Length: 335
Image 1 (cartoon, helix red, strand yellow):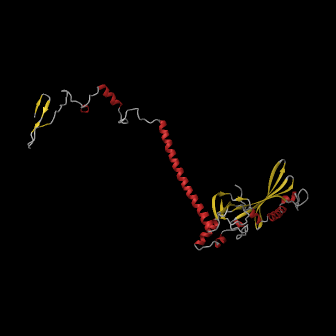
Image 2: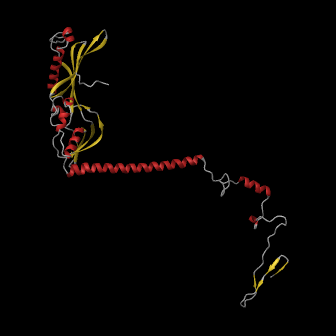
Image 3: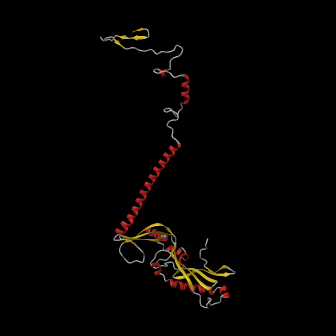
């Protein structure tokens, strides 16, 4: 190997008989005698000192692969992206909810109509929402209750109570008479029922057998008929069925629990014939004595009439005054 000036030539002899191999021409790195050259700028020209300092000031950790001020997301773009994500989540939630509800409704209708009505040829009830315990008597219920008899019987019971009251004896006399000198009669009488158990409103399905009924049915010919109705949730019946399932009976419990709080002494009877749930037949009547005096009474009917309250309303000096003539001790006081 020998050098001429700044150029180097290398000649090597291989052990085998090979010709002399010329490696090539190698360039020396130029360097200043006082300072070595920066290895980052071997094949390029180093920048000036002031430009290098300004670039180092601008560079930070958030802009390693990009220049500052480029590629930033504005607030409006962030809001748009957030709304798109929220809309996608709502869409997915709505789809899942519709799928679950659709499956649930199809299962309930399939069991109630397909199995109970078509296959078993029986009635099916689907509860929808809770309803009030107080309701009007249906046409079918009114046929099983002699309303006129209840009205006459309650009127007799009211006159008996009034004839025993000292205020009525002193101010109106006995026997009691109205302004025309005749025995007072009820001029307004209303009757309703109150279920003892909680009630729910729902839909009843039955096979379309075209039988006559007192209820108004909606029909799908040859398939089924349905109508809206309400039914009580019999808690006592549920307990009785549970006890019967474990070979027990509730007959002994009726003797322990005071039945008078429910129906008086009629603990094995129901107000409506053919019904097997607990309810109360309630009534309210008005009886006029004169233009300024009125008797209002309230009670319940169960085989016999049971009065709960009798009030006398009278106008005195331009004011309406209420006198409580009779009140049952077992009546629930209003809160």
